[in-house]
Amino acid sequence: MSVISEQSLRGESLFTDLSADSEHWRPDEIDSLCMNCHRDGTTRLLLTRIPFFREVIVSSFSCPHCGWADTEIQSAGRIQDQGVCYTLRVRTKDDLNREVVKSDSATTRIPELDLEIPAFTQKGALSTIEGLLDRTVTGLEQDQPVRRALDPETADKINQFIQKLKKLKDVEEEFTLVIEDPSGNSFVENPVAPQKDEALTVTRFKRTTEQDVQLGLRAEDDSVEEPAAPDIEAMRNEVLTFKVNCPECNAPASTNMKLVQIPHFKEVIIMATNCDGCGYRTNEVKSGGATEEQGTKITLHVTNPSDMTRDVLKSETCSVLIPELDFELGMAAISGKFTTVEGLLTDIKDLTVSRNPFCLGDSSNTERVEKIKAFGQKMDRIMAGEMDVHLVLDDPAGNSYLQNVYAPEPDPEMTVETYTRSFEQNEDLGLNDMKTEGYQEDK
Image (tube, rainbow, N blue to C red; front, side, top):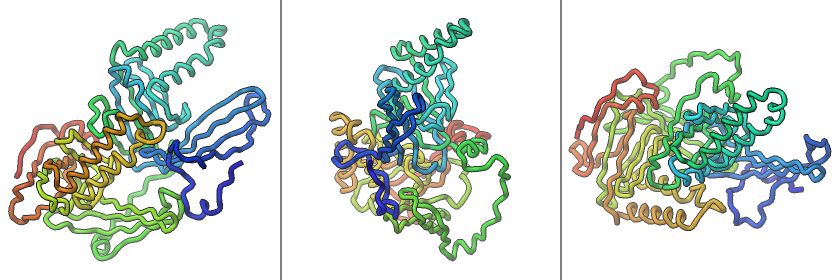
């Protein structure tokens, strides 16, 4: 049986990147009681890290006596700051092959069939759209023999519903699959990455009190207390430090927070986390002010390598577009950052190329890998000043910024547009009472 080393417990991460190339990668084996025949079986635990899904524990049980087997996937990473909802319009049979990470806290819906699978009624799974349908059919068929004996009428109705589910796999008509996960730890593949997926909509949302209780973030009898008013002047003049657990290895770490004034813009809160145990480093930026009355769309024409040094504040509500590459990065795909144009492009390249989960191990295919590599090469050319492109920051909250190197004079390579948010954008920002209209340019 594999043993967890003392070194791992003292700071080194227990989770290994998901890969088929490691020769020394073995699961831990534990003797376990079989719940079918009540004799000894074996549980194998694999602690691994899937990009975009963070750490997971894959467990597999098998019993040599009765042959019973079971598999399960559980998230071992932290619960994200926001929930996530994936809405996929299934149009062709190819869509059924999309890979899906579904945590046990996710709710699955197919509106056309009025089907809803509530959270915590299925175990977490790494599967495909077709696999999710098959799993649902299997669950419904499991108790059909008993139903036919006790309640034939109900059994017939369920059988008719099962046939409708099976017919979805023929994709004779389009249908919608919705996966809503308040933990933020589910994922649906974009097969045309790094381009925008027209069939897939990803939205992030703030959890309700009930969802926090479900996830164990708050006790049912907890009362919500009004936070004390912060001392703004003290925050401007000092760096605040508070203790946290490292999101990578869970060792004690510290987060530093500072209120910073960006010239010609506004105040922002910069937060940096450092872990001495595993070396994890991260920084994140939060807007120090409220949501603006209008959204902001900033377009930079990248014409010179010196553009890479421009300062950028990308809020967590900001989308990034590069029209020449037909590329769009949705809001919250990268957390809020105060960096440079080169730093932002480097983060985008790392997210779409280096850490793309479907270009690693057994999930990869030659066509997809070559497409992603070609995108990475184009990003390198942009950062070297060898490609003429436009970088667009579209922030419906109006809290993003791109440095004007000619300030206070107008920048000939940059335009700033303000616009009234759409109803959908107001929903994403929790501002449903605001009106919708078109763009108003302010160069």
